[in-house]
Image 1: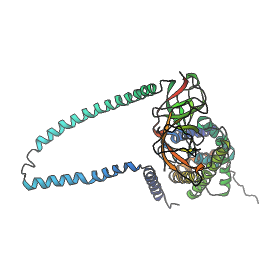
Image 2 (image 1 turned 90 degrees about the vertical axis):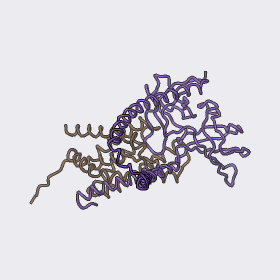
Image 3 (image 1 turned 30 degrees about the vertical axis):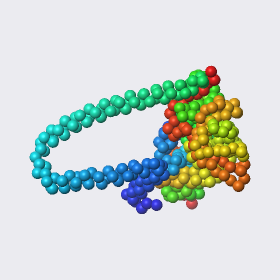
Image 4 (image 1 turned 60 degrees about the vertical axis):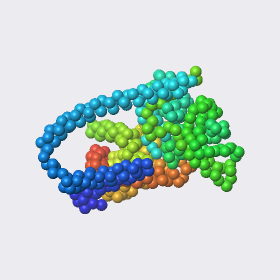
Length: 273
Length: 177
């Protein structure tokens, strides 16, 4: 494919750049467009500011070069101050992250007071593209058993499918193999939500009763039917409703309340108190 | 002794690839789709070390992956072992010297691996087929693997020939008159 070593390396570099661009472009969030605006602004605005400054100086200020020595000392002092501030900022960031983790635990514990829970960290995620399982750092020795429910601050995460002594495998809500019987909190209609291959934040709600009136934004929670998930755990909100010719086939999409891409801390419900 | 050392190196490489796949490639994705480095790795073993080593290591790596993160034990092992077996078939019928050939082998293996794996999971767990989404995932994954082959091809060749020199005895043809 490549005629000599140099063009071979160039080819690899070009491919690598293309790959990075593909990764960046395909993962871009629409809400992040303002960042592009910021970048565009960052390129032009400093020059624009400088030009305006120059224009103002030339227009009526003669003291432009007078205080260079003074500015240099001031600059040194500011640099020193800046490095001190950066140091404190780093310390602050560490304390903040510790605080957030602890808060998360406390919030979780408070929110699910009715249940006896075991806190855990997510230590691994599935490596393929059509399943969504996670590994948590608690196992049989911590009292974890199969089919225990796993929750996070925002709502339901999934259930334990297997355990080792110190880890447990959790099948998440967004896995295509998961189907949860749930209720719409306002109308109390029962539906079934299950994971899809399309999106890791979207569930498909099916078996919607023909007389049920769904509304965008309706809250969906576990119904307690099925024996795995306790009743009343928040799953997500109705995002879109799709009507079909046959009303029994209509379905809706549910946006999960838990962000599975950023899931770090969870609680395993060991029993109802 | 050299063979044992090379196998040990391959096992270490497997773990490095595992950590890369689980950490780096879980966020360095194309449209949220991860590549599958294990397919490239086992195909490389099959191509250069032969079907025996390819099948054994493919099977062991697959079973280990299933134990670690999978839902069913065995399917990844069987599929990776098949790729290891196919490696030698590819070696006998196609040239390993061409980057394009290796890319096509990887694309073919990725599509076959994911298709069989998906059909198996869907039937076993009685799920609905999501054909459109699956085709999208497989095509992006195959493309991603092909791009990775372009990038790591020189490394693959170097490592591959080192493996080949260890496992495949070159027979010297003497001339008979």
